[in-house]
Length: 231
Length: 286
Image (cartoon, rainbow over all chains, first blue to last red; front, side, top):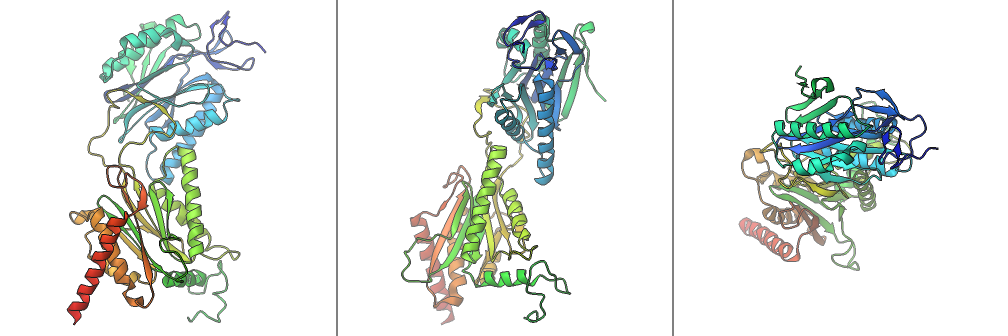
């Protein structure tokens, strides 16, 4: 088996992606989620790779697990999809049996249990972000070992290593939605520029009392549009 | 007891022709012989109280508790067969603990009542088991403050999370009563056991419905609970009893969100007032 952890391969630097099976689809990724004045914003690039080959250039790495609880997936596409599916099932059941929508905490707790108990089998780095009436917006991160971190903002995936400086320099608490979108877009643009395993379009999801709103920014429009998808 | 001799009362899982399960009705009789248990849902907490009938002078005072803690913030008191009550509490603890390991948070009182209701109901379905000989009162306080995931590290933005809906009230005191049939309802005030009729009559006089103005405080609730147990004991005056009383307040209140014994000074004071109120009644009659 080819060991790729922390190595400079011909397809770029691989960080933290560990033991992928040969041929396994990898989300060599740039993902992030931030708190802002009215809730949270999740953002991601759209590149999925199998080794040097771009298996999908318009991937959606922002996954809904409940109406206003979403996650950013990094690591093995198969593993993270499976975990997100299980969490979505649990949150759906929770909503029905308790007659009350689950909170971001509930989602984070279930994600963590799955990631920790199956840490030897999984290659999953997940950021959970959600909004609810009681707690407002919240961002939790679950890195490889399955620990759980509550954060003001969180970045993840191979591309994140390039933007620690950018984020630290530009982060502000209590940003407006416009400032938040600009921050996420600026950070992901840098990650895509420097990380060979990240690329394609920038996707975002804004979670507030209004619900979930999707944004799309295309490289051939210099990541300026089309922007929010208003139905 | 028109059921006796018809054969329809010999087993669970057999309906009588008019749609009754006599085993459940007999279980209710077991409850009606037990010491009175009550619960009061006050403005800022819940009180549980129990008339513990003294069955032997050889038993130590204040030992052999009848009100149990199920989770930090939840208590259970039951009237009826004591061992059945113990089993109920044991199951409730398992439910609370399993909820914590799944959701990394304390179980809401409503969810515990729901699960225990389902558990008790299952004992009315099979011929191999008998229904619970208890009616249980479950009282607790769901945190009004935000509770983070157990074991999570970090605290999010320094300015706090944005986008909270203002004026939304979460958590608070809750009270449920679960019967041998598995039937359960939420209550402002609940009473079961031998003296339940007298206790219910007293509970109905209290101001417990928040829709009808300001409800009684937790401390008033403690005093009323003691008095009601004393009133309910009037009909079995010849028997000795001990008053057992616990309470649960908000995190900002006297028990800091925990289910605890009512402190000795407050309990003694409540019992003194209860006795005085009863003596007062006697004087009126003279």
